[in-house]
Amino acid sequence: MSIQFPLVFAFLSLLVLSLPTPALAADIVGKVVAIQGNAMVYRGDKQLPLGDAVRVVEGDELVTSGDGKVRFELRDGTRITLANKTKFKIDKYRFNREKQTSDVRFSLATGAFRAITGAIGQQANPKLEVKTRVATMGIRGTDFWGGFIFSDALDVTMVSGKGVYIKNEYGQVELTTGGQGTTVKANEAPTAPKTWPDKKVNKAVAATALEMDQ
Image (cartoon, rainbow, N blue to C red; front, side, top):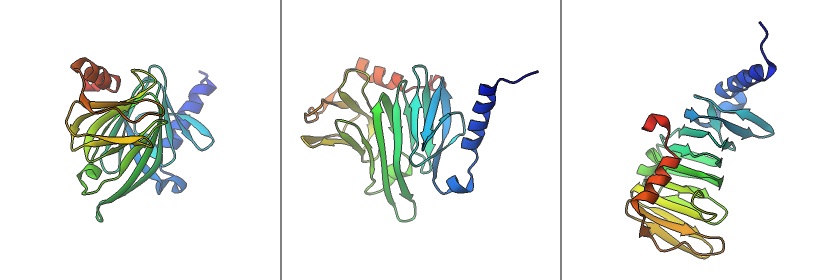
């Protein structure tokens, strides 16, 4: 029985990603806990398929296909789920449980995500930000959603929690109540927070929901 080369390559790629080699062990920030459809990770000059239990490291860019969704969990327990057609990069991850400090930065290029913070969200002054081409989102300790699925503009909503701030060079707003949202267009300040209709909230949440959540 012959084994096709692409299948061998995919298996070996997942094996490399799953095992914490000495060169990567110190940089591991979390792991994939669930995946649907197809997704890739861009790590340096490598492009490799993602799968369950794959370790993620600082600098990874996770990319989902038209049918792909990925959920990964960081060392502090923060869980992030990526919608279809999403490009999401782990720019920096610093978390110190003993000193109660954090400095976590991501980039969202396309698509949408939902983040439910773990121990970082319990810190007095957490720093967890997601940068996009039009604005940066930051948390106070929360469950929040952001993405470009409704239009070319960035939409952000807080599902629950302490608060989410959205800022760019034109202004800043803060979401303080579950269900509130804002929209940010290029070269404009974020719109004033307002409660989203249930239909819009449900569509956003569904975009980042996995079959296991239903």
